[in-house]
Length: 160
Image (cartoon, rainbow, N blue to C red):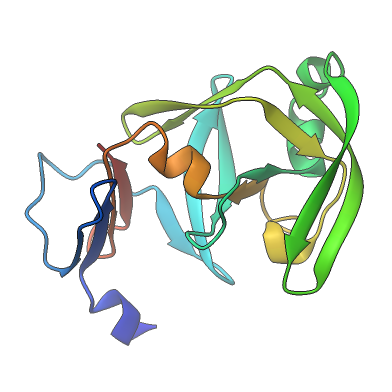
């Protein structure tokens, strides 16, 4: 773990560039929004409430789960019933799901939108089901941002 934290920061951009090590900060460090607990976890806001998501920079899509449905039951119950396939190391599984037109997340100081937002009715541990309301993928991080910085010295994830 100490070796990983010693990297300083990891930054990648939509233009294909990536940086590793100490990265010049663009402003004062905000309150930490990252933590290590069986993986890297991200604190964000949705519907004016704090949520915790598993951070998976290798996932192309964001998967919300039963924990999200439980925390926001009155909103999620209005969703359209559907099914959703989730593919991982163990193969593809199909889950019952609910779909909302969008969910707005605030990550640091930036608001990003998951459109549409599919909430699968599962708690798969490998994609945040044990601890979190979902698994954040590159769709939420990169589609509305020009760059992502994971700063391990300040334990912050910043979207620009």
